[in-house]
Length: 143
Image 1 (spheres, rainbow, N blue to C red):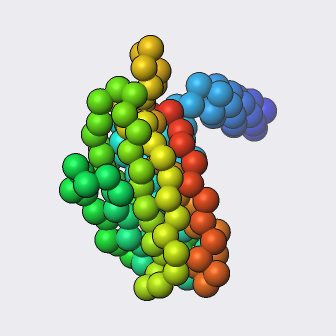
Image 2: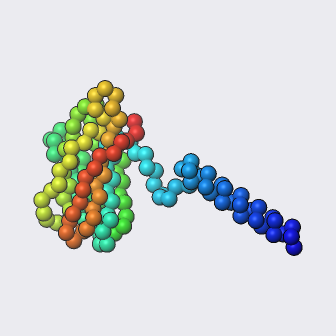
């Protein structure tokens, strides 16, 4: 009886140790997506409780890229390498939530700035689909 208890406690202790070390090293990820995206990627997070239609275009005429999608409540949509530009070139994104309303614009450096700065990805976090409240942020991307 004592031997089985020791084996059980040793197994539990080993499992906890492995989980702790894996968590610290980032081996066990809490999300199923890769947090590292290439520059020019657009991430749309619907944090609301209703599905949301989103349309994203590029304001500058020399680019011809569009996202037309519906993002379910609590889900994230990712479009890798949505726009590509030269280093230091600013690209303006315009997002429209739902069928009407004013578009929200955002400036992005898809290839990064000059002096070897990291490329950027654009994240659009929608808080409430009914009120169409959203916030753009830029995050570091991968080369």
